[in-house]
Length: 115
Figure 1 (tube, one colour):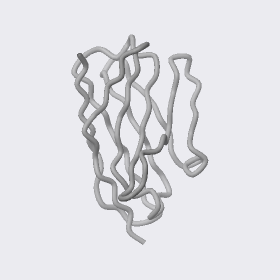
Figure 2: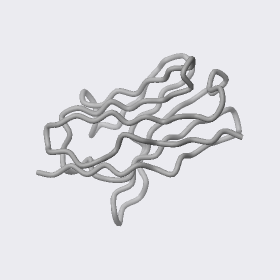
Figure 3: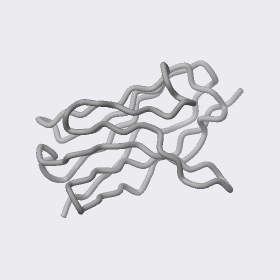
Figure 4: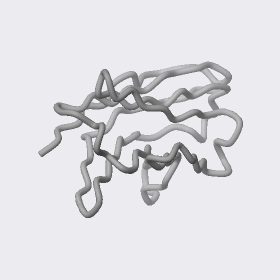
């Protein structure tokens, strides 16, 4: 079992930056896929960024050239660097790890971008 805790969310003005962190309770070296998802009020949860073990990254069109996903296996951490934030980026952000058939989710961290 892997426990995940997101942090780094908060209130920021449009155009600002924020880095979200996801701390895992155990080693993530064997995790095949990492990802970040977000959910705005009244909307479905959407995929924001995903990175496979080979390093390939997929970003949602709405965040391309603004967000960066990364992982640090030594620290058992996953990150989401968010730049040039927009009000539409507001939502609860969730960290997701996949190891073959197993999936792990954190409880989320709130990100609010004001205009």
